[in-house]
Image 1 (cartoon, helix red, strand yellow):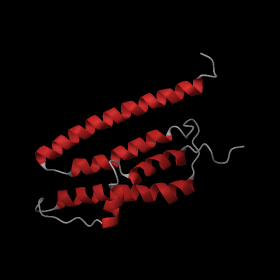
Image 2: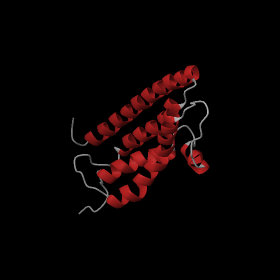
Image 3: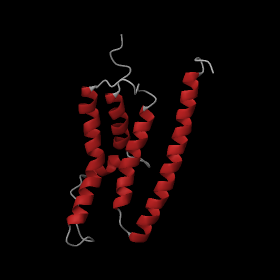
Image 4: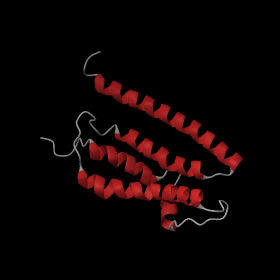
Length: 148
């Protein structure tokens, strides 16, 4: 195989990996949904929404980064990744802490602002988690920044 075809092969392999990741994610979601339906314990569902989108964001970013050369983009990580990560994982973390420390697991209150709930559950995946995963990898392995 000539070097001219190598970029095309890598992109096609990336698409195959994306399809595999989405199939695995779908199977995991079915298991989580069945577990929630039988136990009425919502924590796995909440954690699934945050982590699945984060992992998919990391995988999508592989198209845009050169993973052989670590080059930190601190403004991107501090100003985009960290706030999106906090927004994305605030609800699962506080929900888990409150549910495990509550004296009556069926009667507890979680201090979650309504706007965090609204932006985290847009569609099937949480957009802040997706952005956090994508910008984490782009911020760690910046490719299109200061090239000479």
